[in-house]
Image (cartoon, rainbow, N blue to C red; front, top):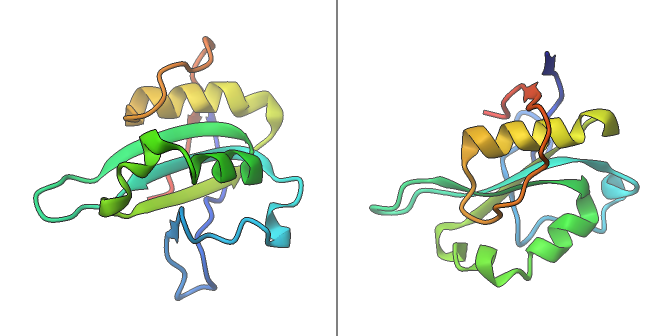
Length: 124
């Protein structure tokens, strides 16, 4: 089984781009009651390879607000922190989070739902 969804970017097509975690406007109406899955990663700079920093689920506004001040995540700020999120049905959240954690191997976070992984389409 694979869950299909639309991963979000900032701005309007065709100029849209990946959102910067630290500047994304979480007060925007878009985030009202938005529950789903998210991926935070840092970009490549000089000799540093891009990497997934954190994956998670929940109320997107709340989770990203918390992560914007998380020291474990902020230590990757020099490499630019990006974020994308997708709204998915609650019944799939645990399985999708498990799948993303297994495949992307985030640097931050080590406890993920102990459930069968559910594949999801990729944002990139």
